[in-house]
Image 1 (cartoon, one colour):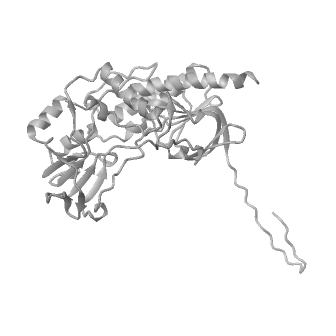
Image 2 (cartoon, rainbow, N blue to C red):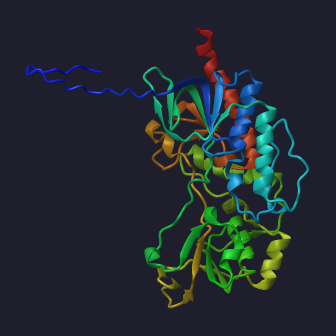
Image 3 (spheres, rainbow, N blue to C red):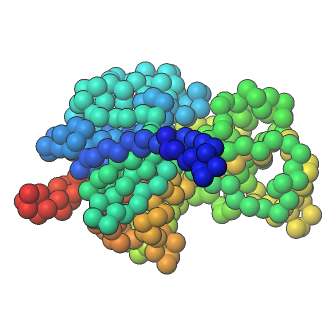
Length: 377
């Protein structure tokens, strides 16, 4: 307390409140505990980084599971496309009709325990800033972590993409995104327009069509269905195309744009029912539906936007990483503009198998990059 007694003898005490800001230190901070973040944590621990002082994983969710814990309950495991084991611990035998959100979350929780990964949650990262001493400050709602290197594994689930079309704000029905979808029951008896040409759009369209009064599927481009099995060659082609984009500093594109939509038994059934008779994207939204300039109109009670997601990397904005092309120029997992920062589960590694490989690659590069500095101490 400060004594502010004036010349007139009157005292005016001022209460000084000092707020304590917690600061923590770690060689490497990993942001995100999904597939990519856990893979990075495994390789950090395995190669000698000590949990806590050597590395820490900050996760914004209340529990394990990454984005998987938020998937809709009707997505059962045998409908999941291409899930791969994390390094060092295979996924237990799948229960085909168990919700994927439950099964994957339980697996991730077991993985964190098995390898003693230092996951701190819920911790929400607000911003990452560069320090004068060359380190990074990772500012969160639970204090600041100061690090020598950063592995960002925040994925895309928290950044659903809502495209703009004239009249969208005038629509009197309900609009929701894939991220909001919880199952088909709430669409019973309603007229639903599904927007988007990806795998999720087809899955949700198939579910909703079993209960809705009517469904209409619209996409910006004609969908490409691929009868070819998704094997290594097709996977490499997809990764190469996305890698080319991020090396040039462009935003990473959609994998489906390269591989096409897989023709599964479910897709064949939907074709037979006429559910996949697609229309080109509408020109405007009206209070009661969607309309085209040629005079066509489709009445709607619901618009379901299956329009994808964008990388959740706004917290990295203070580092100034974006290239003129709008993306972040990458060399593998390393950000070209800042060698301290690696992005995993981003661009060409935005798949479960890609995230595993990216975690290992990022750790190997960080070890090599930190080694000269360590030798000075």
